[in-house]
Amino acid sequence: MIRALVIVVIASSAAWACPPAAELAGDPVLVGRVSEILAANGVEVTPGECAPLRARLERRGAAIVVVRMGDPSEERIVSDPATAATVIESWSRSDFEGPLLASHVLAPLPPRTEAPPAAPREAATQDAAPYVAPRGIQVFGAAETSFADDRTSWAGALIGVCIQVGRVCVSARGRVATVVDGPGMWDEAERHATDALFGGDIPFALGPTTFTFGIGAGMGSVHTGSLATGMPQGSETFGLRADA
Image (cartoon, rainbow, N blue to C red):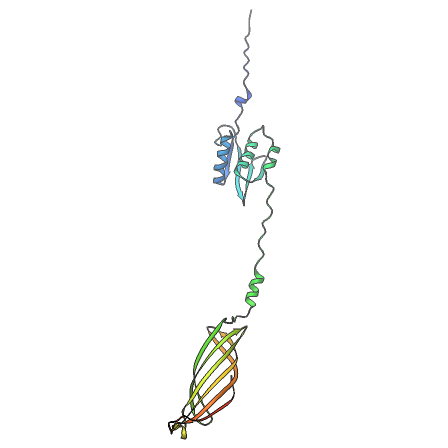
């Protein structure tokens, strides 16, 4: 009698199945972080003989783009490395379903809008008048010399103050002058004048130089006296004054 012994070996399919594995490329920092999370979740990141899932990680602004390479290809946009690892793990496992990840996937980012150009403001600045009026109070002084129609020579000084009001500088000026030379009696006579004027000046800038044009009007007096007696004798006259 012939007996046949049939031995049936039943092996678990899970023992021979390839473990979930993924091969990552792209941004080195993202690859390192996602690889750590995948390894902790049981997904091999250094696959052996089994063909691994191939994925690429890139940054797009503040989001992370996860691209599944191969056939089929797929792209997901997520917010952090943990969600990126979950997406890759779902692709590498057959027991994960895509809808489980729907709550973690971000919508595509809206197109980036650029700020409006500042051309109008720049144009307004370029069209503005190049002159910038000085501000505050200005004090000035000057030495003067002049010749009168009676052939006398005068020397004097002028001091003033100017307050800027818009483009015009409102000014007050005081002037003193005396005769220093003349024919005939001026060896024994003296004459001096005092003026007080009020007006306005308009400054114009030309490169580093500022030119000021102005007018003034007011009152003045002229004293004429004799030096022969050694006593202060003479006359005083008053009148209107103007200058430009």
